[in-house]
Image (tube, rainbow, N blue to C red; front, side, top):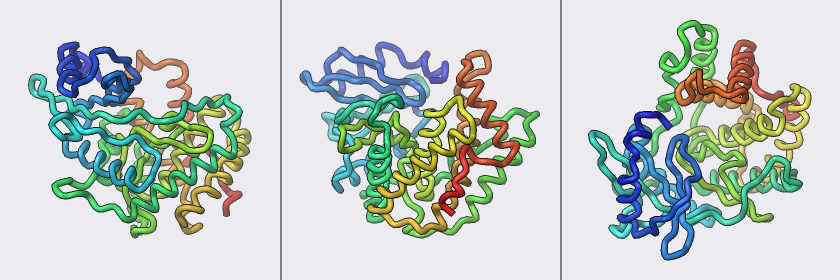
Amino acid sequence: MEQFVEKLFTQEVIENILTTFNLDHSYKKLGDFENYVFEVNEQGKPKILRITHSSHRSKQELESELDWIQHLYRCGIKIPNVLLSPEGNTVEKFTVKDSAFFASLFEKASGHPISLEDSIFNEKLFYKWGKMIGKMHRHTKEYQPSERIVSRHHWDANDLLDFEKYYGKEESQLLEHAKNVVQEIKQLTKSKDNYGLIHSDIHHGNFFYDGEMIHVFDFDDACYHYFVSDIAIPLYYATNSKHFIGTREERNRFAKKFLTAFLDGYQEENKLPREWIKKIPLFLKLRDIDLYAVFNKKVAPEQRNDRVKHWMQEIKERMKKNEAIVDIEFLT
């Protein structure tokens, strides 16, 4: 979290939020990268409280995200339901100086976190992963925002794509590569069958698994985007996490195993033409350029650990070569 936000997020602020939602004043912090996320208790029952600063999202953006979550929940997608405040709102605003924090409450997801070393991190899980995302895309085609809900933004409105702001002045080659990737994606055709509202960040850290079903959470990055991006992102993170220090050959072998099972599940729920599957490398490149901006925005050079430094260096090398994190010729 940015330092100026940390200074604003005082104990008084969180106590006020807990009181407003009639929550117990005991809590456990789960995360604080882009949002503050806490496990809280409502009459002894665990819930998830998310608190967002206005520099990250507007109230309208949050309401549009939660409206879509409610649609997916009604369609039977295994996601935590949105819980209304005592005032009947999905989002409550708390003004602090000349900014604000927005709070929302959710059910706690069923299941358990997944470790890369677990024996269940296998083809069965990858199949379920793809099947769940395919089901989300299929039901999203039916989605229309509720009355007074402003539509969620499109992918190219992302602040992180303002590359001049987040790339160094000496990184002209990287800047040119990033702009070329974005321009190529902008030229793709859009239809109801290939473009819609997507989660945009379904890596293994954003769902729990109960052995049979995947329960997705953290829809903060939801936006209108090409469906294939929601396939490329799980592939990117699963491969990068499983073989963070590894050869390209090792990553390619894992990618083939992962994507074969994943697509078997996905295509059962939502048919995406092969011509779009073949565009996965382009969207893997988009994740690289996006992440490079994230690291520059969120992690000051003096705060970068060895893992972040290694990750950024690998991204730079791939950008210079105009290559994706893995090769998927086996799909052609």
